[in-house]
Image (cartoon, rainbow, N blue to C red):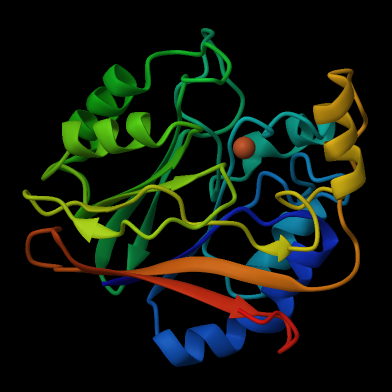
Length: 267
Ligand SMILES: [Fe+2]
């Protein structure tokens, strides 16, 4: 099976890249399943709305994953329980966590589990992603043919360590959250595809999607500043395409993709 994974959709411009570009990207790469990280997709760049989720699904997305901003749009509590194809990090603590930490979908007669897990290095101290992912994979492995993990984390070391810890037991682990696409995509020794970060989808004339003057002000003054999302100019869509052998669930290939909004970027 071929998976298209698209990284962190930021604000209105990010959503617009999905609605305007996904059809042609799918025509070019012919994925059988499309997964998008949508945790920054509101106009404010934090969380997701039900409307945006539905817009993404209408545009050809099969599963939307989240991350540390999953809860920032409070409206999420009104629909996440009834939306199994919207997957929040599986390792939030508490007896009852709203929503779903994974989903299982049918892809050409095969079953694919999509898991969202969140790192702890330089992030909130939630439950241990290593033991949580280990347990989830143990539980799911007999039920599915392939397992894809969106690892929402800050530190490349944590993402790579998690991928190596599960190498051979999951088909792919791809990082999100840092919004910069890395160039280290590879197949690990036991058959798991790995990429430290898939990169962001949305405006690039700012700092990771946010207006640069506010971000610079915070670095200069070390005082809290309200960030706002860039809403005009150039944009990119960052993703990767992963080929998985349906017979054994092992990855064969992982390839980065970058699609530009227009030809003005000089990239
Ligand atoms: Fe994030």
